[in-house]
Length: 467
Image 1: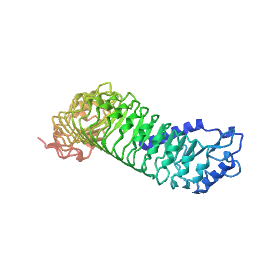
Image 2 (image 1 turned 60 degrees about the horizontal axis):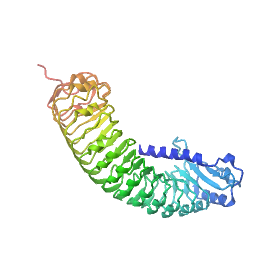
Image 3 (image 1 turned 60 degrees about the vertical axis):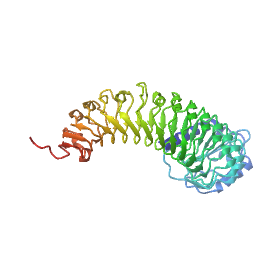
Image 4 (image 1 turned 90 degrees about the vertical axis):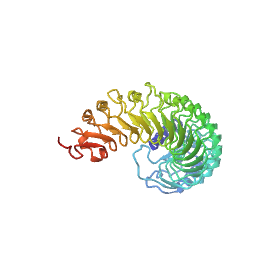
């Protein structure tokens, strides 16, 4: 899903570039010799080009070359755009080589895009820092190595910087905080290390920040809360530690907060409940978070997905208003307790409820029935008692139901037999008894669906004893 987001961001950038670039058909001046030589040096750094992208790079007028656009009056090169797969069709023919230092001689360049070539390696030339006119740099999905040049902070006109999907290592330069025109910063899927510089809080126009899949460590800087225009914050799959700053609640435009698979600790700040109606996706799973789930967070009506699984959270599930847009609630592998609230079955848009591996007690609510939109119910490995409610048979769209490893008793309701869309069922390791209702799909599931109960019988288990 994150890869798809990166592709969408790249596509949006391309649309922006089309509006910024001068049209080759409108040019009246030929390109200057200095620019032509710089481009030929760039071409010389490409050792293989089976795609044929650079075949047109011959002749005197470089403004006619593929991927090159010039200013119509001066003839100076203003953009270089080479996308291996502009239509997203899965191109498998990639050029190989490195980026020449001569790229820094294209002094009027405002757009530099070299994406999805897979085998473009070497370092990002330090000469890029001389290109003071640059608005957009995108070098995604190559094999670039080395570090991000510290001189990147000199590109004061830069609005979009995207270096995702490379092999870049070392720290994020502190000088990145100088880029106060930046609206999009994508550094995900590299090997970046060190801490997130506090200077990142200077990027007051930033709307997209993606740092997923690196080896970043240390705390989330408190200054990040100053990014009032930020809509997308992706910092998952790193080694970030410490508390989640309460200042993040100040990001009034935030729509996505993805911070999965880090080492974040402490409690979830109540201030996250201040996030706006734009907020729809929260992933804090696979961390070391403790304490209770903030009531303010659950009162937000805007989130579509909340994933707090694999932490050390305790207490009850705070009430969620019926006006909520919540579709997916994942609280797996915590230390949550108490009854499973009946109102969960009445949330009009809730489709996936995942509460496995906690300490919930009491009965499964009857509200999981005719008024429920639930398709996925995972409540295994808790301490539920009582019988399976007959109302589950009123959920014709139910596809996945896992109630295993609880203390459920009684029979499997015959009302569940017509659940034709049920693709997965697990009732093992309970105290259920009696005959498994006949018919598909209940009889078609493997025996492992029903094993380790008190006295269940009938297909696919051994036949029930005759009386």
